[in-house]
Each structure stands twice: as C-alpha cells, then as structure tokens.
Length: 520
Image 1 (spheres, rainbow, N blue to C red):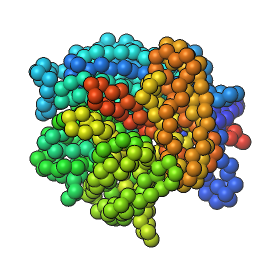
Image 2 (cartoon, helix red, strand yellow):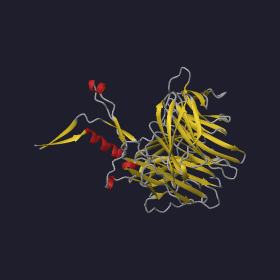
Image 3 (cartoon, rainbow, N blue to C red):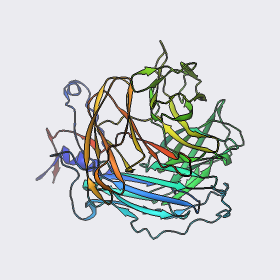
Image 4 (cartoon, rainbow, N blue to C red):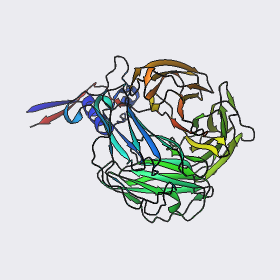
C-alpha cells in the first residue's frame, strides 16, 4: 500500500492560480475558535476586459498596462515556465458586435455602422514584460476593438490597464477614461440616463468561449422600468456588445440605475454616456451595496455635481450627506439628508458644492438610523456655456492593501485621498514611464474626515506616461481617485478613475496538517 501526501497549502495555492481568489471556512466548534488567520499569497492569474473605446473617426486612444513591483523581499507569483509562465497580454476580442437596435454613438456625419467588426487575429495588442515597467500603445479612429487579457505568474498580482480616449469634436466629444475591469456576474451603475439629450450604452464583453446570457434591469425614481427584452441578452464567447439603454424599455426616466447580472457565464460591463453640449465619458460600476459610501475626488472647480443613489434592498435608506474637504467634514446647506425609497433611484443637484476646494462626498446612515445598503455615483461637470465637460465618480471601495491606476501624465494628473473615519498614512509610488524615468515614492498623511488632493508625484526624468500605486501603511480605510485633465480648445476635458484594492493577494491556510490519500 502506497501513501501519497498532499499539503493543504498546495491545494489552496492551486485554487488561487485557477480562480484568482480563495476563501476559507473554519470548522464548527472549538477548532473554529482557535483557527488562525490565513496567510496571504500573491494571486497567480488575473483577467481584464477593456470596452471598444469609440465609434468616432476622430478618436485617439492610448492604452497603458502595468503590474506593480513586489514589496521588498516579497515573493510575487510563481515564476513558472510553460503554460504558467509570467505573462500579461491584452488581445482584441474575437468579434465586436453592433447593437441591432441602437443608433450611431457619434453623429459626426460619417454614417452608421450596421455591420459587426471583422474577427481579429487574436495576436497580443499590448504585453507587460516585467513588474514595475508600464507599456503603452496607441490606436486611432473608430475601428479599435474591445480587448480581453490574462496575466499569470509574477505579472498577475495587481495587474491593471487603462484606456484613455480623446474625441475632439462631434456629439461624443470629450476625454474618456476607464480602468479595464475584471469579469464578473453582478454590476451596479447609478447615474445613467434615458433622457433625450443622453445616449447611454452598456458595453458587455465576454472573455470566455461559451455564450454569456445577461440581464439588464433599469430603475427610475418610481421603481423598476418595464423591459422590452423578454429573455436575457446573449453575448457570444469572445465578443463585445454595446447596448443602447433606451432600446431596453419604452418608459421614460431622467435618472436611472442600471443593474447588470448574468444568468450564465460572466462579462465585463461598463456604461458609456454621451450628452449633448456637455461631452462624454465612461461610468464604471459602483462599489457593492453598503450602508456607507465614499465618492472621492470632486474637482475644486466643479460647476455642477449631481448625486444619484439607489437602494436595492427591502428597506428605505435615510442617509446623511457630508463633504470631506481639506480641513474637515461639512454638511452641504439644504442637503443634510437624503431619503431613498426601496427599489427606487433618488437624485439631488448639489450644484457647485465644492466651492473652490476639492473634496469627496461621504454617505452614511442618518441620525439614529440603521445602515441600509445603497449604491451611488456622481455626475460632475466642469466649465460653463459651450465649454463644458462631464465625468462620473462612482462610490469606491477602500484602497486596502494596494491599488493602482495607469496612464498618468506629467501634467494634469491629480490624486485625491479620503479618510472617512480614522486618520491614515499612505505610500504613493510613481512608476517609471513607458519611455523611461526613475520611480518616485512619497508618503501622505490624511486626517480623519478630510480629503487630501495633490498633484500626482511624477517620476524623475519621465518619458511617456506612468502608473500610480497607493498602499495603506497605517490607520483607517482610505478611498482614492485619480483625475486626468487634458484641456483642448478652452474645454476643460477631464476623467476620474477610482482606486479600489487590486485584490493582488489571496488568503491561504497554514500547512499545519497534511491531507493523506491512500492508494491500494
């Protein structure tokens, strides 16, 4: 009789390599009480999806991909060879499908594209070679496809990619930025709209071989909107599909919350909004429903700030609204509280709430109230008259251990750090540039209930664009965002990306005992 011994840590590590995360359930009884906290090891596989950037022939898009370097003395990834070798590649999706019921995304006189894009060759479009060194690529026009990608080994922990598009004219004019997302099965997008002046598309990208079936639910101020789609929306494997929200319902609604779920499979989802005379940008998914929400990084010169909140549970939410500025937290006059009915979308116009001082919005349970889960986002406008530009700030999860945003520029990049509870200290690393430069590290102290808004640190001798990595060193949770501004023809074009934890590590149990398999 032969005894084969398999260590528990090997089993858990294999699970992390396949799924990108692992969870542990302690046994019942006394063993649960004495179970030690699991160790954390780097994930060995990550996936990202980037939507097709634009249908405008005037679009200029820059993609940037980056994996942060491991901490001093830390092991990052397996360093394995063959199928599990270090790799981080973005490839064009197999097919970019046209929305069968939607109109053109940009009315620039070029005509509507009725046919699906031709299948791509699948060759790598952008590949990271080593941690700590970002890479970039450019694409012009409206033919750029959606991208799908996977990182393995030492390039998987913290892998991030940014897609930044400039459209100089037309109804889609603006600076559009989005951090490429991990595939999932559940997304919330408060802040969308079915208004006549808006064209909002939800972009669905399927990274897998099988067809994903997606449900898109819309909620207005009176509750759920009646859908014109009898069954789920099929998204074939390896394809990307933009769906015009106004084709999903005959109902009218100014402010809408979009809920994307999958019946089968998984997708990446993000909403692209185009607004007449105001510009366009991406609306990323908000943080998961929670009793509190932090929306970081409202620019100091914002001329219009609209808050949109949805309560997905069975209870109404009574929320306290606060603005965290440089010196403390204040309550916006006339908007001290917000009542959100269950299953309904609420909105409030906060106007120029920052009044020349950058800040972040904090939503928390009202006085004496209980924590009722909500999702939230901000629609932010800078500029006046015909020189306005729009961007969106979804509620953000904390930075946690580490978070990264790529495609920062020597000028026009600002970092916002908010500590809604206890004071905190964070370390910010500006990586080398895509064309060269030396990393720079700075630490920032953030007082409780305040927002620290600073120009992003810039690498010495920077050439090209670079990545910013934020790590929580001590204190309470910190929420962060990066604002990128590129003014053009007097229009203050800008986009805001939040920095949630990159989930670059996974909980793995200690190998205190072996699992033994007996073979006859």
